[in-house]
Image (cartoon, rainbow, N blue to C red; front, side, top):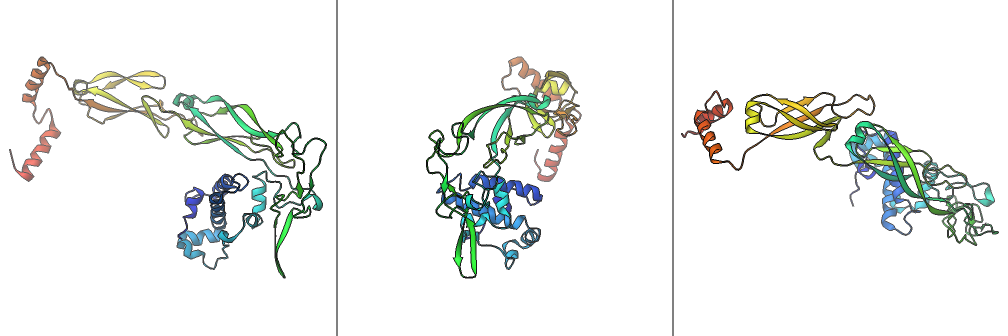
Length: 380
């Protein structure tokens, strides 16, 4: 079975930096992490696929081979067969324990259990939400109130997951060490205990309020400042507003991703705003001053005589600010010419009289077009 492109697996482009690849991997691994998808074989397969992609793209030499030769370039490059590995085995590879330990509240993967010392602290989950903005919000910047639900420390058990007056018991699978050895002879692989997930402890009498998880869902309301000039899909990071860590680890962060609502008249093009404005044939031919929509209401725009369909006029400084420099873009007004569909007898008569006067001077492009047509194909 052909493997998917590693860049596609992580959702990054081929020009992505090492930090971009690491962030993308953390996000994808979080999505398909076994703790969040218990018993889901499809999620486990995707988790392994992400790990394989990260193994290649995070290694400069392997990435260079892959970019040049594809999968063929990785033969003999010391690649692991992730499809045959247990998820727990992946945690201990190439320092990935630390990467996952900092991202998931999974009981301190790779740390020592109760009998072997203190379990390593683990950072809490990051959370994601969306915030809807109008173009006016983007133009000026705005403060938004975000309401969301996150898992917080259970107040009844203070996060221990144990019922009042009880303590965790020693995990019988690993003897409290948090790790188990697989294999025999000279070759053994030490992995995180699948029963206690590295904590070395088992909750014997779980807290009723949280069901033995140590966490309960709670609503949270925060105010976030969104800078002017943000773009669709851009994330605003709010530090320490994610879920609590394990064993004293820090909270994760909250990422608010921007969604910009459509405007009735304006469309965004980078830092410019585009308005498509219809005018009549007579306005285009004779010239006129027209009202055009903008973020600040209507603006007067002078249309010169002889304006053609599709002509674009620029209003300086009426676009959106650049998020870095603060310099504003422009507003572009694209003209369309509306052909009348219902004419009075008088209007029709006047147009017929006008048509008789049309010549090379009035409509030079039309005249040249039909002259070329006649020259190449003949006809009247």
